[in-house]
Amino acid sequence: MILSSVHHKHFKSRPKIAPLDSCLQNTIFFFVAERILTMKLYRSLTLALVLLVSSSAHAKQFKAGFASQEITPLKATPMWGYGARHAALSTGVRDSLFVKVVVIDVESEKLAIVGLDLGRSPTDAMMARIRISIKETSNVGLVLISGSHTHHGPVIELLDEPGKGKDAFDDAVAYSKELEFKIIQTINAAAANARPAKIGWGTKSVAMNRNRHSKIEPKPVDTELGVIRLDASDGKPIAMIVNYAAHPTMMDASDLRFSAEWPGAMMKAVEQQVDTPCVFMQGASGDLSTSTTEETRGVDAFGKAMAVNVIETAAAITTKVPDRPRLKGAEDIFEFPTRMAFNNPLTQAIFSTAFFPELASASMSDDLLKNSIRPRITTVLINQELALVGGSGEFFCDHAIRLKQRSRAAETFFFGYCNGHHMYFPTIEAAAEGGYGADSAVSWVSLGAGEEMMDQALLQIYKMLGKFTFERNLQP
Image (cartoon, rainbow, N blue to C red; front, side, top):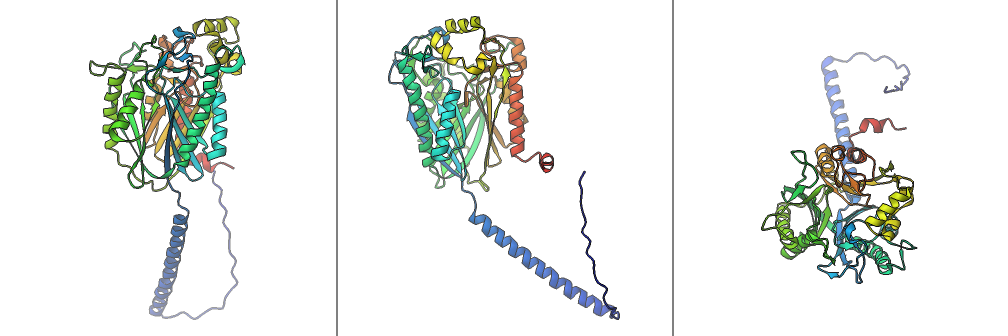
């Protein structure tokens, strides 16, 4: 119910005046009306001019900055991604690993988009420390930190505690501390490099991935290649961000050299050909692998072929200065029961055997030992047009496909392995099929969790777009 109140004015009685000639009355009426309208128009124009000047004086400026740093371990450490390796140490470097950062700055709001040539994003404890540090130093309050999911990166979960890495893997423990410092350092550097910028984005369907899980036809596959271009106000490139979904598992598990895998080869080719820093943000690739031909077989060939599509997509993008720069973000942390009993010593023993004892012990958080898991969804809206959603795990592609279909932002991109890593998130249909990625051994979260998280991301997008005005008006 809408309540309204009417204020009644009380007027004193006035002496009666003899009626005027009707022609004279009309003349006086139109003269007075004209003067009133003129004064109203003048006041309206004056007010509009004042508002325009005030708005221009306080107009927000859209800025962007880029920074990168090498993060390849200098010493041999256990490698991430294949349980069969157990605690085998790395034997060398095939190609270097990097952290690459784009910071988007809209006055009081700043977003860091961070691509890591690692199997996963930082642990929850690392994320918490990173957030505090970059907020204090550079006032960066929003972060999207994604691992490319290369299976030829280092283990980063080991801790400086007995039985969790200390003494047995001191070099790996030291690396994780150094990694955290370098991520913070690079985010701060990108924030310091921010300058007036233009933004644009584009997409292209690229059939270079396949569904490795489903046996039901047609198999879901997200073939969308997304590219975000950021240019300085003078047109010089700042960076481009590439979003695609495909497991970087082209190299053999027996190869113990560090490698950024096909995303690294793609970024290198892009940077060489168009002289623009390239950041990769993995998509919802929980059930997607690369799909190759004779010409694209192998890390380098696949990466170069993908770079051709990236460059073509980027060339078609027109960047512009936003009319009304805005940056909004929200992070939702969920709590779900686990599908396995992690407080059962037998479960812990199975994971110790499947990987290696120190890693299994370091990965057993307090939440897991209570049979609880706390994944997160981070939702960002840039300039009321571009939505970015990051999920902390390996989401199956149908989650991203449906989110994009349902979103009403001008464009929506999904980043997987983002702001934490909570294993696989199959769709309900995929879990019903079973198989690797859908069974409880690697999909620890309760059934339907992924759908619930995508719904919340969608709600956040609509809220940021201002679609729920009725609910907002009812707030006290």
